[in-house]
Length: 251
Image 1 (tube, one colour):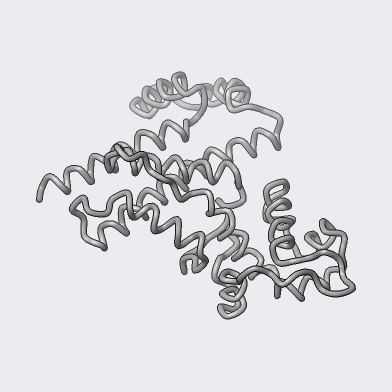
Image 2 (tube, rainbow, N blue to C red; image 1 turned 180 degrees about the vertical axis):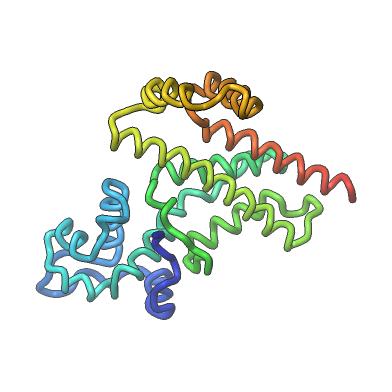
């Protein structure tokens, strides 16, 4: 079950997302602020995943009582909204001056891939309503500028950026899931297949799935794993770019 951005009270989240400079700590209290609660939440999620993120865990991390946090952040849903917005701050370029649109979109993909590697918990966050914070919107602006003025309509620009985002998310999720499985089990893909492969060959008739057997064997030998998400990312990205180029050429 994913966590959702936009499941909070919109007014409360908007106040946090677009807050100005904070007014200092509360009199008589510890040095706590929205930014410190936010930073603690990100540190916990980076280290342990979203499953262990709670207001109680954040309070323990900061050395304060749980109830004291609600002065700054209304609840976990609003905290997640500002966490997601905050980690998007590093994805705003700039592009090299001489970069063409294909290179700019490759940079967009690389920035999104790096974002998931820095914050693996993001792959478990769903945002069907979009993000309404300044960093998410700045990232969207930056990505749209990669294709602004090349001949796409506004709707097509949005679709291109969305398609690349989906593609990177899928590849990053598979990559991170594989790493998490290996860490959890203590067994690498190749070690697992060295046991599972011979077992499969005993029960799988060689002539029943000839194409799958041939292609799967070739891919497994070259990837040294069941799949290679980074290779899938690169291959799929180039096909997306080829499709955009063909669309522009038709005009």
